[in-house]
Length: 124
Image (cartoon, rainbow, N blue to C red; front, side, top):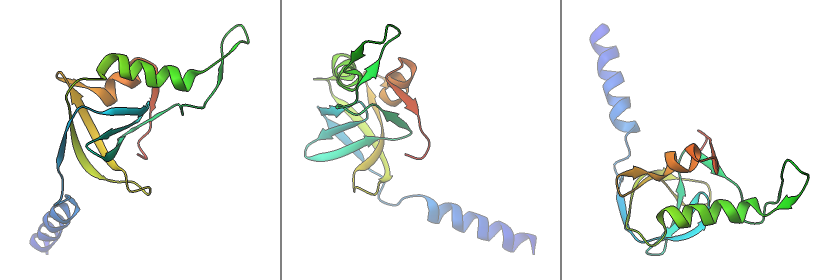
């Protein structure tokens, strides 16, 4: 019985691994703080949620500022115009590829969270 449970566990682990996992490599168009486009493929940075480009924030002095545009611009400043390698692990409900991306050996998903322009968001 223990053997059957082990076989079932291995089967489900293999079945849960996407057979179509791919890498997308190229120089992106930065759409917003958590979405880029490479070679016509929309890519949602997996595991994070960034501000939308039309989102407005209020600073400590009560002043409004375009925080969504700033998040996009910070990502563009860090990694725009550089070669990205995105490891696709699935798709979201909008048919965007969900991926973890690297630029110059830096995990961009982690970088944008560590620098305060996105939150860790495990749903995506």
